[in-house]
Length: 216
Ligand code: ADP
Ligand code: AMP
View 1 (tube, rainbow, N blue to C red):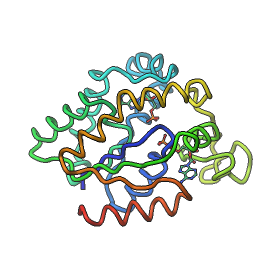
View 2: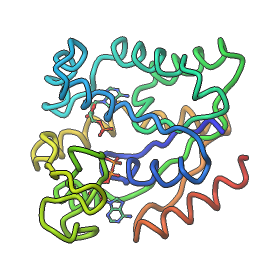
View 3: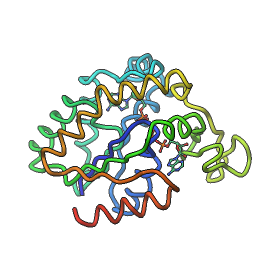
């Protein structure tokens, strides 16, 4: 299955991507994670991406598309993949369609996670991420046992630079302006499936898995 997750920042894409990818036995590709890894390692790509990320803006399409093209050339995505956070603009969606067509394939489905803006702000302002294994926690919705320490691997948790209140509001504007048009783009192609992403993580996963059954 070749699947894209779309939704505003904080909708739970990263959280669900991990769970759905394990369920479908496909690799998860998160452009945000790849950028953050490059920032942490201080690569030229990371240095270029950082200024956009910290401001809550999108990294330019040509940079992002090139990075995804390289990733989709790898052997492990031949039988399917789950994209989290890409595409985020119509030109990125068009580039993905062209790339998949070159590979003789196409997307199976685009799953939209629908949440309201107030919930997005609550989720993002309490998000904490493990610096070692990347697991996503939340200070009230899904707190680790020990403050600031990952239950899964003992790694140190950090708050993302772009999860500050002012940046969150700006990222939502960027989402409505540049990413939300993808909903119509994929609806017109007949591959959009929307689910209610409010409520506990397990309930959202169950809704996602049920919705995806029709597309396998
Ligand atoms: P995205 O990848 O869409 O930006 P994340 O998966 O990182 O979103 O989730 C944002 C925050 O919300 C995280 O702290 C996560 O633990 C929390 N979260 C995710 N899904 C839910 C949910 N269904 N209910 C409550 N909190 C959630
Ligand atoms: P995310 O982890 O998906 O919330 O992404 C964090 C940040 O990485 C975004 O705010 C952007 O700056 C950048 N980013 C991730 N994916 C993309 C993309 N597809 N296009 C442009 N920028 C992206």
